[in-house]
Length: 400
Image (tube, rainbow, N blue to C red; front, side, top):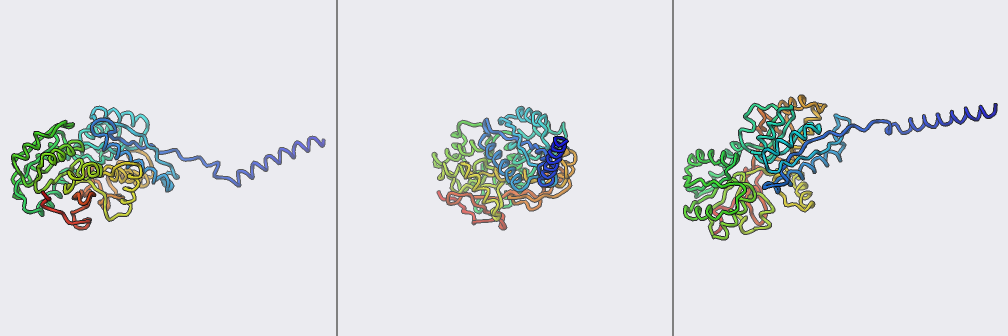
């Protein structure tokens, strides 16, 4: 009898203790929300690997910030998990990686970098109603194909060319121009536009010179520039070709009044400036760039450099694009792809470190995306136009 009472008492005690644990520590019983998988697609191998690495880092830093500040509130604090895809600087590989990311259950994809890569990637994503947020790619047609899933966070090249030409008109005296461009979708489209628009500013286009990407030698291009002696060279290239051309111009002592890049692959790159300061000094660019008046942008630059990287626009634009996706999930209260596409197409978003104010997508294009004009001055990238973001005044003509 006594043994029976001892057994009951022991069971009662254990039950009471368990109840106390449950009441005292209810958080233990709450299930941790499932992480939200976000696809990040960048070229981290191949010809465009330098740019892709910076784009990936920008996305990583944004995800870390979101997770460190409580995750996605609308989903109970769910954390974002990066699922990375390397498009290998190749359009076919870009489409293949989208297929893989879709199979892994990502809710959206951010990135792509180059126009030729984003053409195939966005088309592949459209088959699955998979929201795709383009970071840096500028070809107009990316958002002109009726793909409801495709959104470009940065400006297209028509928007950038308009701004670039407005600011170019302020550089005087300038009468003659040589256009140098990579022969892909990005460079060829921009060159065609410039051939039409530059004469409207009273600028004579002496010649338009195309080159492949990648290019191994720029001697013939620079010799032609020397022979034509333009006031301005207007390049549209990726990083490697821009550096090669600028260095060859320096070595051959070809120095026009100005180098005025539009989406110049290295013209706003701290790596180019640190490695080849003389070739970079004075180069102007109209390109993606962070808001220099925003302290968050300067903090991001410190974080990028603390990782041992040279700061380039790929980092801030991907950082901000990931923040836009997080806002869309919060506004939708869901990771449902169709809902996210609807929210992205109908609502406005804080643009984080980019100078866009409230980002608003109309037919897939962020109509408030604003490129900035920069110039390398004193071994750093400084904003020269527009006035509300300017840090310094332009130096033109460049010193011989």
